Length: 301
Ligand SMILES: Nc1ncnc2c1ncn2[C@@H]1O[C@H](COP(=O)(O)OP(=O)(O)O)[C@@H](O)[C@H]1O
Ligand SMILES: [Mg+2]
Image: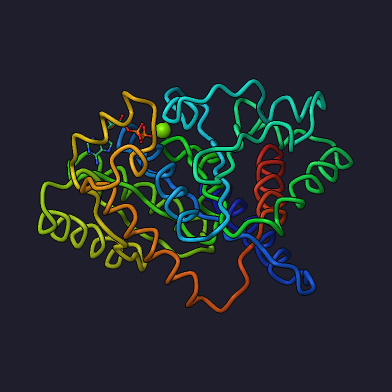
């Protein structure tokens, strides 16, 4: 068991080094931001959708990848009905650009569907074609926000391990916090390459967020040696439910609500942090190449 963990770790390390040492001369690379949580139902999809729209409102071209194969996803929250998803691209029935949906405020949405984890099964030439299609998005977008399913399944974890920024969402509930710690621990064990950020969702007051956030932050530092930055809190707000019921994004449906203001503020902080980082982001091509390599190799461990 220990052997296998070490094997996976060294694979992840090797893939990361390879990607980072590659030179993409002068090409602009997209910043990959993975939104994840230990537990389901903590508000990831709602947060990811509204973060993407807020980033777009701040003038950054943003793509949202729905990588959760479960129910109640991005399309449902936005009242969209995608006909196709990555599965159809993988089956070569349709091109990547044709599955992309134009979302509100200029965001673009890639419905992952059941195709997302099948990327690992592509033959080399099929993967090359897929990367070429994904590469077209690279120059046109500043951020790729990934909404993941919950939990520490290795396939889900890879989205966090290879991202530039890992946003871990939790609520103040002890079970949610324990599971958030679990996912950070698993990502740390895989030596995730990006920066960790914590968002405490559904707080009743800022002071509650501060207390809860700092508790988790200090446990992560003490026991995992992981530096995690609290990037913000999102208020418990009835407007979130109303927006969901109306199948509209919160920041559009109720822009003056507390939760909408909170998410906009987090988007602004994320831009500020991204601007302070000097290394090149991994980019869409580098990211997909990394996660699929990781998935492929895992199956042979
Ligand atoms: N800040 C919030 N205030 C009130 N309710 C919220 C908030 N965030 C999420 N919710 C509720 O939680 C539900 C689940 O959110 P969702 O984004 O689908 O979670 P996840 O993607 O983590 O499973 C939403 O439909 C909404 O009713
Ligand atoms: Mg979700």
